[in-house]
Structures are given as structure tokens and as C-alpha cells.
Length: 353
Ligand SMILES: NC(=O)c1ccc[n+]([C@@H]2O[C@H](COP(=O)([O-])OP(=O)(O)OC[C@H]3O[C@@H](n4cnc5c(N)ncnc54)[C@H](O)[C@@H]3O)[C@@H](O)[C@H]2O)c1
Image (cartoon, rainbow, N blue to C red):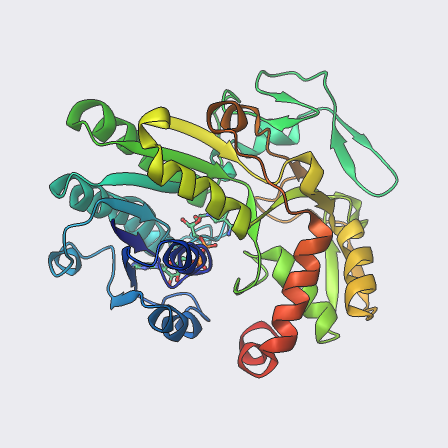
């Protein structure tokens, strides 16, 4: 098999590439990336050492696809992945990459009749609708209830039939617009496609920053003993997310690559689920236990733009169709990321500290 992974030097792309090459040494894997994300440059030598071909290129440029060989599958994992991107009035890079760039990836896949696996996001679900969901305020977190004003949501989380009307951030919109085009290519050009709407993905080699990669950011701030803040929702740190370890995501993508006929054309929510979820407050507790450090955390009551109180993935559909479910819980994720910080302290300090 020959596989192109766009955004292949990014966190998800490089993790998938290295896991695939490790499990299938005969596969030829090409990782295309423009190294826009700070820290992605650290992955280039990891890719080459693993026997993967790194190609410096930009998905916004059609010509950058011309030098690539024919492949059997494309995993589209490039993006400007920040939910805040473009909200300051400069959306060009975001739209040109996340939407028009995806079109270039689709056309390349079509040219070579390659299967197309897309990393979409839970951020396609509208902010206001999520913010009006019924929840209970527990001692350390917010939780969804079963009684809800809209379909597609229960205490298990948000499912694929959650209503899509309403604003969702420019990031979420570029992903949703890409999803719509992917469905057209599937229906009218016969491209075999899968869309994975992922919640928070995390793990070692994520270059966490304030607006993307909160898990690594939270652990790194503990590790280097810097300040953090609970922003919004009363400033108590009860906002809750599910966390998907990238190794769990890999098992799903591996299955999809090899069984695409069984899920061709599907849209699948994929995340850590309730079992692998945490509030910021709970995460702080785990970080203190794992790193042995306690840091100051300021309380800021005002809610940040485009933030949401909670997001939990309902994995029912993906589990029913593929048998996949996540296995790695929050504590193990924190332990693995802390170990990774320990082992790569010098290289990571200028990026994460
Ligand atoms: N990490 C998460 O929590 C999460 C959750 C849901 C969906 N996703 C999606 O998964 C994919 C991977 O995200 P990630 O967390 O690895 O982010 P990342 O920033 O680590 O990786 C994205 C990579 O794309 C590259 N890139 C950006 N613009 C490019 C361009 N124009 N041409 C070529 N390369 C370009 C970046 O340099 C980076 O290496 C993205 O599509 C993202 O939207 C991520």
C-alpha cells in the first residue's frame, strides 16, 4: 500500500504515519507538510528515521501535488486546527488551507482513485446549540443529562444527528464545508471516503498551545511550573471534554484503511467518550499527582470567544459499524505525556514552555 498523509509532520499525521510504518513495514508512506505549526519541524527527523518520505509542500498549491506519486489512500490530516483562527478578521489562511486545500487533496485522490480519510472535528456542531444543552453541575465537572432540547445528544454525549444549524467558528465551518464536498466526491465521482469527526485528540508529540492542544499545554505548564487559568463558566474549571489518545485513533484509522467498503461514505463521531473525559479541575488534580507539582491557577469568570461548556463524544455509531472503541484513559494519557516531556525536555522547552 502507498499512503499520502497531508499534515504528515503534525501531531496526528506523524503519529499515524509512524504507527502505520511500524505495523506495516512494506507500506510506502509519504508525509506532506509545510511546517506551519511550530514544533512540526521536530517530527521531520522522526519520520525519516522511521523510513517515511517527508515532502515539504503546501496543500494550498495544486503544483505541490504534481511531484507526488500515485497512492492507494490519502489521509487528510493537515489544517490550521485552532478554533480561534480567523476570528480576528483574517480568515484567509484558514479558508485557503482547510477548505480550498482540502479540494486539492480531493482532486489528487480522485486522479489516483485513492481512498480518502478525512480528519474532521466535533467543532462542526454549533456553539449556541451546545451551550443551551441541559447539564448538571457536579462537584468537579459539568455533565450532560439524558433530557435534552434537541436530538442527537444524551448523557453519553453528542451523536452524528445533532442539529447543524448555527455558527460554529470559522474553523468548524471550513471543516463542515469540506465534509459537504467530500460527500459530493463520494456520491458523484465514486471516491471512497470516510469522515471522522474527532473530539479532542491528544498524546505525546502534540505541540500544545493555548488555542489548541489543551491537554499537553496543561501538563507542560505543571511540568515547567508556570501559571494557568480557568477561563469562563464561573472560573471554577468545571468545563469538560473527552480525550482521545492518538494511539486509539490510530487503531480506528488502521481499521478504516483496510475495511473501507464497510464504512464508505460514512460520517463518524470518534472521541474518548465519557470514560475518557475530564474537567480542567479534575485534570489539574491528575497533573499534580503525576508531575508532583502544584502551580497557581487564576480564576477568570468571563467565558472566552467560541468556547463551549462541555463536549463529550457519543461513539455509539462508530462502535456499532467498526467495533472500535477507545481504550486509553485520561490518567494514562497524562502519564505518557509527562514521560515524553521528561525524555525530550531540551527540544520541547522552547516550544511548550
Ligand atoms: N488535535 C485535535 O484535538 C483534533 C481534534 C479534531 C480534529 N483534528 C484534526 O486533525 C488534523 C490534525 O490535527 P493536529 O492536531 O495534528 O494539528 P497539527 O497542527 O499538529 O497538524 C497539522 C499539520 O498541518 C500542517 N499544515 C498547516 N497548513 C498546511 C498547509 N497549507 N499545507 C500543508 N501542511 C499544512 C501543519 O504544519 C501541521 O504540521 C487536523 O485536520 C485537525 O483539524 C484535530
